[in-house]
Length: 243
Image (cartoon, rainbow, N blue to C red; front, side, top):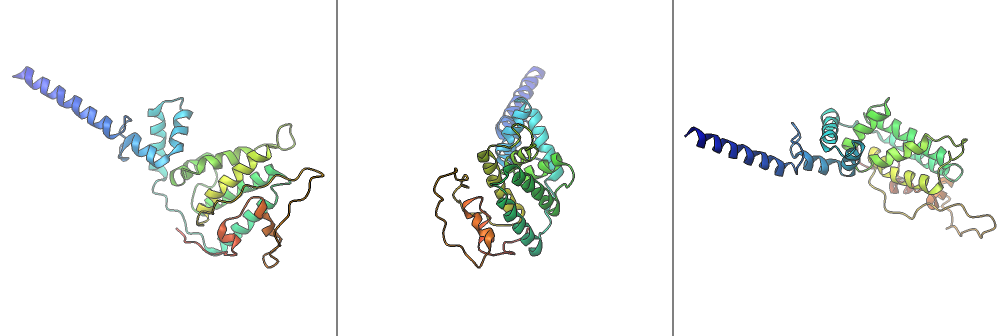
């Protein structure tokens, strides 16, 4: 009887272990985070794969890090951004875009600083870049990789050989980080727009521009460069719902 009881207990333990693996997608069960690997993948998206790669393929270590981020920042409730502050940020974002053609690195550095200040105003960690990125990855996981790319470009020294990044690289980083900006500023996602244009080569014919909108100022000429959020282009300085 004792032998049969041992066999039954062993079979039950194996079945329970198999059930846990199925429910967690093959990953480790994480206390307080139902779903295990599957839940973390669903929450973090591409950030999950990036973290696994950063841990040299060690999924257990990656899941432990991601679970730690959720425990630390998952209950963070972003502070409401008042309309006047949002309007100031919108205006500054437009000015940053005006600098793009003259110096992509300068525009990237200014955008990097703006995102840091805006995130701090919303209640994310203000001082340490790594902590800020960890917190943003919990609440904005689809856009945090673009913010990292922008930050790397912003750290380059334009005065050194190879310091100024290719225009396309900086343009892409700024365009994609705009999506993080619109979320942090409580803006609706901007409509897809044509990419910024490269400066015309010397001697080439100037592209024809649409008639200027004299009522909105010279800053609207950026429509052919890096576009501002749709709400800003409509002149709405305080729209959008706050979180």
